[in-house]
Length: 476
Ligand code: NAD
Image (cartoon, rainbow, N blue to C red; front, side, top):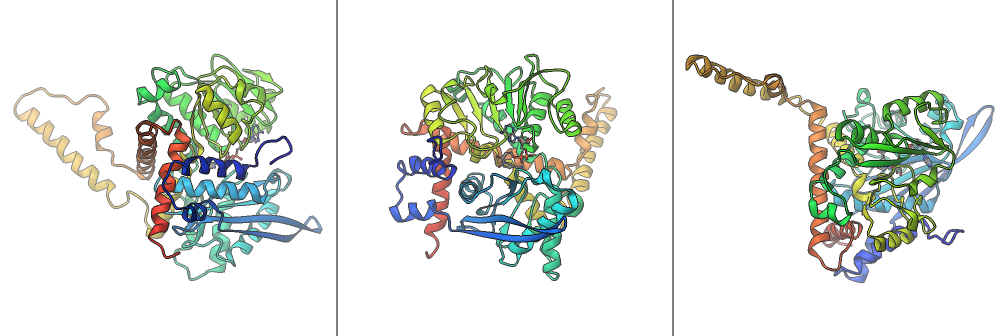
């Protein structure tokens, strides 16, 4: 229990788990085995910086090894603690099972404000943290594969991969020890955007089902829907950008750590993002109203609320005031257990984190497979696919000319049809398929079982039953 009477993140996740297992037929022993976190390693290490030794505290938590490697991001934030890392590791187990990536769940974190250190210092700190984890096989292509999370990105992943390879010079699969790397260092096209892109695919799939929209009191498609986004980092920026530029959503507010921007006719996400990158803040952005107490806007009128910053932002004190009929949890754990109960009784539909932000781990899975197969996706097939399409088009054109049929192909059709799929197209296709398939598994439970009235419980039931099946086939 935290000071404000709210449950801790870990307790919140466990209670959501308990709510689902009560509706399942698992033995108490198996239920307990799945719930508990297998291990958490805490490391305190020193780095000589600015003329003195600075000590840092980091964690790597392994929630479940029913499949290996275990997978989960590394977060850099001052608020990182064991409870949070364990909650996030548990969510990774359920997330990986839900989207059928062959991993157990893990998570890491380092208590640090990354903005307080320059790039060279961050590299020294990251390499030292990685060294501590690598020497204990807590970073390893076959056992434990981290990825980016809050406060980390491609740059940190490239340092980690390089550190692993320096310490394991004969491991031919070294690049697969971490995902989310830049493409020049063994990464994959489409990984940076993946979590936000997954949020977009999740919403597109939700809006394909009239019964699901009806539960939230929504109609029509995404076009014109008013959206509020909290957090314009990797996940929030990409989700808001794609939804506004490709689906016609109107981003009416962006909430950041130092305030919020509001504009009823719609914010230009790319412009705001560039302003933030240059100025380091959203303050002063000229084309929108600035609201100092940004969190207030979580309660503003909109069709879709996207918390994409951090956990616990919708809690017992503000849940009753939330006006959005649909919340999609792009961040991990943004709605506490207490808030979830309040929102359920209000009839708010929540697309849960373990599904909504699974785009990241899905594309990380593709990257890991690419690293193990040592070949870029599409390299063998793309030109063969183009040649086959060209044969067909040329035959149609010949027939038309020979028979004097006067057929002409629609403008642009030929170019589109003749272009084979490159890596980015294949990654997006694989991600879309994953998001659609997982949503359908979840909604089947939601609609078919009378005792399940929300998507979160449905998601837990799907993933826990998959983890249980894996454990049953193991000698424990
Ligand atoms: P990030 O560090 O890139 O961005 C976080 C953003 O939130 C920043 O712009 C920050 O200024 C803002 N922010 C921080 N505290 C805030 C507050 N109190 N109010 C409003 N804004 C605040 O992080 P990210 O990678 O985008 O991750 C965001 C969330 O998504 C986290 O919960 C993370 O666990 C989850 N997630 C990330 C990924 C991924 O691939 N990066 C994958 C799955 C889940």
